[in-house]
Image (cartoon, rainbow, N blue to C red; front, side):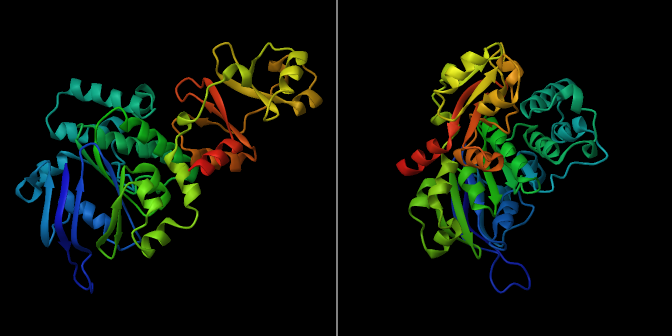
Amino acid sequence: MIKLEKLTKNFPGLKRPAVDDLTLEIDKGEVCVLVGPSGCGKTTTMKMINRLCEPDGGEVYLDGKKTSEMDEIDLRRGIGYVIQQIGLFPHMNIKENVATVPRELGWSEEKIDKRIDELLELMGLDPEVYKERLPAALSGGQRQRVGVARALAADPPVMLMDEPFAAVDPITRARLQNEFLRILEKMEKTIIFVTHDINEAIKMGDKIAVLKEGKLVQHATPQALLDEPADDFVAQLVGRNRSIKRLHLIRVEEIIEEEVDRLSVPQNYSRKEIEEKLAESEIGALMVIDENGCLVGRVDQKSLDEKTGDTAGELIQEIHDTVTADATLNDTLSVMLESGEAYAPVIDEEKKYFRDIITLQDLLEELRDS
């Protein structure tokens, strides 16, 4: 879908090319992450793809066609672009921001409205609540979702994402990453994703292209990068704790068994029934679910000792945090460290249904197997 052939870019005052004879191929539907230290040529490479920056040598091919022979405005309209600063127009509401490219392409208002509603729902933003709001009224994470929605508005086959999640806090960042990966499962997009964070590259990429001083050092799958770094530079970039980084490659849904009955109790469960079932719990706690199967809290020995209620609903304690089935095991480890618990409940993203428990022992077994 995208082919870079001997791509080169020089800037005045630099002793070496910003991008040096770069050749790279990205297959249709693939997420290729460009990673490397500052000044390695990641963003310059991306800008040469949509001709925000013209190369001094080499060619960029998009679906077999030279981009140098395309009208640059038409080229950019056909490529989704997401940047770290998000770049929403502050004087436009969310609806107007998302509609920018479809309006340029001459879509009907009816088609635009339908597309906006569809994308905001996909991003987890209620159209009726958010369409008329200005960007300043949104949180950083919400603005980032709108930025992605705007990039997807005209349904481009190719997306360029330049450190799109770098400006948000780590917890929001992990959730946005997971949401974006979930969205990608519903649509076929070819994506070039720039980051300086090797952990994000391993999590997000089908392939990773490691750049150093404008040159391609290694182009491989995340697994291959962890198993066989091409040289000392790549090994240093990946770091020593490769086993833990492998947790980025495994999703919760791949290892859960969904033994809900064994791990949970309904809200009307009696104190005696809780005591009997708690004695068999390997984590020293039971999840409390409502009549719809949604997680509402937990009970443990502390609940029984400190509270006077007679049912699970009256003995309930707060859950510190949860993970969704599409989260990685690395996300799950982070949740455990934040909460100080040796387990994390797994819930369904949409309805909050309780699905399973992931324990620290589960993570250790996965690390040992890998």
